[in-house]
Image 1: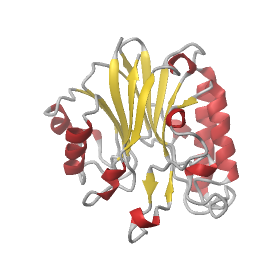
Image 2 (image 1 turned 135 degrees about the vertical axis):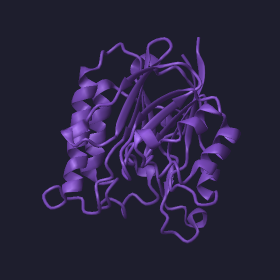
Image 3 (image 1 turned 120 degrees about the vertical axis):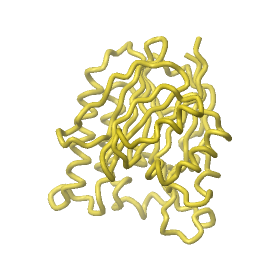
Length: 265
């Protein structure tokens, strides 16, 4: 039996926010830390910073100035590398295998731009293509396999995953076509939504608050863009879940808050 605290966090430039990462590690003490939007090439990644804090195992997928994911762990793992989704060369995925054969997939799904119309917005078309490719990949995963999928998926699928369902129906991240694509993805491998195992669907649940709000906490116009899913074989392994909202209020924060889940597998 392995007990592990896993965290996923869109850090929005890891080198800019190393002090926040340090604070988060001290306060939350995750065993495994999955970062997205790291915005740094692999050879320039501050790996030593993480190793000094006990995260000796690293899997990086980075590129200059954009995108990027990284998985750090105090628990040994096998680095399976990345998939080049949609053949664009973007650093948006890395896979590692934890003890017991648990495959952990760290994703950063394209945001999709501002206009939710694939015919006129290439970024939105890319997002839909990316989700379709993820769905086909999910269908091919062994049905009895042990998989965890985490990251910034850039979709808030449920009505209570956004501050106002009706007002956001035409806003990228909550449009019907994106929500439908995410449902297809979930069904493709019967992915289990871990966060909603702990917070009922009828309750509000956010992980992202825009920089545009002068007082993000008072306005509380959030969205749940960050997710942790497990395959059916692991559905009974999560023990607790927390969105660490306090981190959104730290100095020079990311617009995302970390999500933590304690596992026993």
